[in-house]
Image: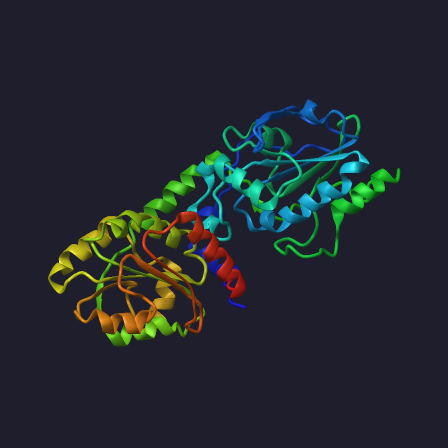
Length: 389
């Protein structure tokens, strides 16, 4: 397992952990409080209010989001719970509480999706959600009214829509597997059996709610990113061979490109965003321009315009390898030698992108323009297979 110490992440992202930027009027509902009404759009095209669930004996509201690892880990279990208890008078409604304006790009490192409404529809389709998935990210009125402080945050209401329980779904945190303490299941079983709630309040394990007020932190992060230095260096066949072997614990995405290649130029911003997205994980983007030697200035100017620096965590690992950059320009002229060094299966067209797992195995390659969602899917899946945290 490749794991980064939490202290290192906090040090790199100190701005995020220094303040919650939550609205001042956010107070979690007390046990016995009435469920606040809401009117929110769902991924199934409907508008839901509290009255939409009037026939349910018990209503379980789960405030969640697309990007949080804790929410992702709980998603399948919540969906199964909704299926298992549907014929027992229990209805589940999931509500996405995250504001896109409050999510820093690196916070998406474990998710294939963003937190916009369109992405929620993709999540609902992929997981075949059996319950409604509502969007509250625009104004966060329901999240504020309920006092949803993290994702996932569960609220269970009885027949009179009085709060009976609030807290975590289970104690598995970021583990999608079985939990030791199946809190919501045990609570619901007790209620259905006519017994008292075992524990009315529990700690909420999950990412803090991404309030709109955190947009200031997003701006500060962007300023920090834009201030990072950028460089491009020449690469020879020996270094190319070493990079392809990937004798590190990192997942390595290598992109071969040229300033004269339209698709290369068009997809570059997406590559930069992909790198930012995963920059706090053991992941790196390596770009290799195959422009002629005489175009060195153009290559350097393009990289600077696209603003592709080394992220702080990547910088540390790159320096351990004796390098100073991940942006390279192949000026040797012998493209056959470069191809044999980087990827013998590469036939020559650009852009050409390959994902190399620790140990040098190419787990994915693509010649031609990249599809952003496909790349996200591949990265998340392959890093999970390689047990890269």
